Image 1 (cartoon, rainbow, N blue to C red):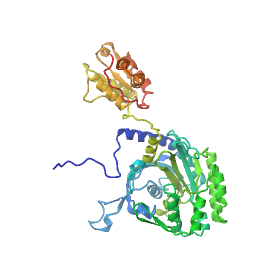
Image 2: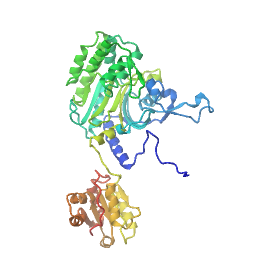
Image 3: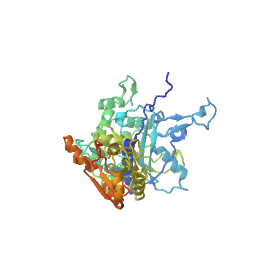
Image 4: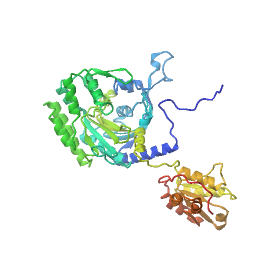
Length: 515
């Protein structure tokens, strides 16, 4: 019987190989540059938190998704206090703890931060939709500001993040691929529900949780959950809110208001709201937000006001957001909102806060589904130095060192095919290098170096169908230059000194170099 351990990750978890990581890094880097252009600064927190930090912050359903870990610092086995550690389920709750812990001594308000890192939820994984039990969130938040301008800043930075990835605003009818951000305000929904007589917080929260499913389940299922409940596909009963039919109809009518501008939507919603201070406050906030979005140049197609948006987490108190890629098959890729009460779980001093989170796995899956790959290389270097037959390998090592010293990211070939030019070129093309450098016996004698533009070679053979022509095109993009011109020549091919590959060429045949 074999003692070998089967090599595989846990269900809901996955390994990320270099091609995937390079794509994710590119996505994260582009978004990071946008965040920093708005003045946000980086921050990190531990993956593990004390259970009291996490529980109760996102609601009872969220508490059930927390991974619990036995702490080495707690009591003896069997002691209930043994299980006192939880793995963070988002980055927002740890941020609230950070504000309470370090303000005002080390953090001054208002404080803008971004945070990228793994979070963990013990729910049902759906890999085809980019849903895993461990996934990466990329958050951006402003703490210490209750202004509507802060709410609008979050929308604008989300728009900038998505557009940095080559996405464009989707048409209102969703007929073309792109993105859009839905915006709503919990205070507006609360005022409407109060007009219907729904004032009990637990009942109102149940309504919001049901509305949060509106884009994921049929309207008939939403209607049933708002009423007496329903059975899911597995036969389990889902409890209903218990509302009367006319109240359910009013809620669905309110949530279904749509127009081609944000202002028109809000104006129609205003006619359905009860008169009173609660309504006046909510409408004032929403209309101020619309003005800020216009001032920031956020188009009607980029951000839409959607009264059906609820966001299920219990800690949201005002504006809420959700970003979606149309025709991408992954659901929402951004979620967030205002959470003015969350810091109060850790401090007697209230701190207003607002932010949003990007789900990196879903976003990358959506980009792939839309055909918006940002790169398919398997390397971080733009150039590779090959080791030629009959030449001291140190010659290749010196060339690689010289290129690196000049700021050109370069790999030195150290595989088992040293001296075999064709196999080394096959490797170079498969990995996506832009340039290959060769110093053979002739180059060494003449104090020259041969540089091959791998992309040019592939492009020259792209339309060739016969083997003879294909082989004769093997030297395309190849040049021999004086040894002192090595760095300048390679830098021109790679793009600029210090740059990696701009995008990957398709794999070459790796046929013997025509010398």
